[in-house]
Structure formats: structure tokens, C-alpha cells
Length: 205
Image (cartoon, rainbow, N blue to C red; front, top):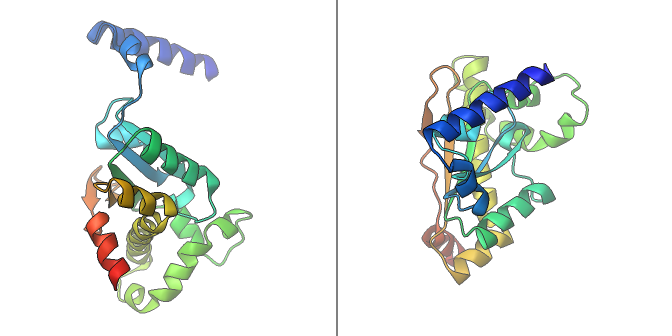
């Protein structure tokens, strides 16, 4: 299987060089993506592919169920690098329908270390129990919970000292919440975008 993967890589690189001579030489000189993508580790939701972007156009951090933990040094380090070093102005928190992590968070079954990681989703499920109960079935409830997890993730990114400092110093950074449909391949805007104006308005309250 590894040999097959390496063969595929050779064919891909040769095809890319044929289509765009000098592509890799240009890509190797600098990294200047427009987007920082925080998404789920699910193999069916690769950021570049679903967003129609080439390598070099999106800086990516992924974890199980795209959860924003305030103590996740991996995510925070990537966020800081994206904002301070790459000067990215568009941050995307992207979840997806049919998320296995969301499903696991709603099950009364042991999942090992994942149970600790998924605790924020269980808290959301308790906080929005009334709203979730109005959904038609278990799948609809999990999909709604996946949306809520994205909205919560946008809020948590906005509250990090990294974003608050960046907004004070240069503004113009926006954090968006998207959800991806496995069944139709479409990204949907959850209309929860926040930016420096939103942050300042909340801080004044």
C-alpha cells in the first residue's frame, strides 16, 4: 500500500509540473495563504479539496470534531503563527454533518481519551437540550449539535488573547463558521462571523 501511495505521488507531481511548469519551485519559496482553517480530522473533509484551493492557499489545523480547547497548545500555536507570522485575515472554523466525534459525544459508551476531548460538545448538548429535542431524529439532532459546536468554536477563537491582541493592533481579521455536507459536498455559512467591530461592541457591554 505504501508503494502505491508513493507511485500516486510521482504521477501527481509529474502531472502538476506538466500542467504548471515551475509550480513546485514557486511554492517552495514562500508560504502566503489567505485562510487559516480549523477543521475536523475526518478523512472525508480535507480543507484544500472541499474549498477548491491549491496547496499554499490555506493553512490548516485539524482535530477530532474541530473543537476549540482553550488549553490546546497545538491549535493555539498554529493560530498564533497564522495571525502573527502569516498575517492571515480570514479564519474558518469548519465542522461537518455526520461527524463521528459529535456522534461519540452523544453516546453512552466509553471512547477512551476521546471522552475527555469531547467534553465541550457534551456541555453544548446539555445547554441546548431543549433546542436539540425539537429536531426530528437522532441524525438531525447530531447535525444541529455539529452546527452549535462550530458557532461555539468561532466564539472561543474570538476570545483567545491571540485574536484580541491582533484586533487591537491591526484589526481586519474575521472568524467565520462553516459546515460541510458529506452527502452533497457543499459548504454552508452558519452566519456567525465575528470581527474587530463585533469584539469591541461586546467588550463595551
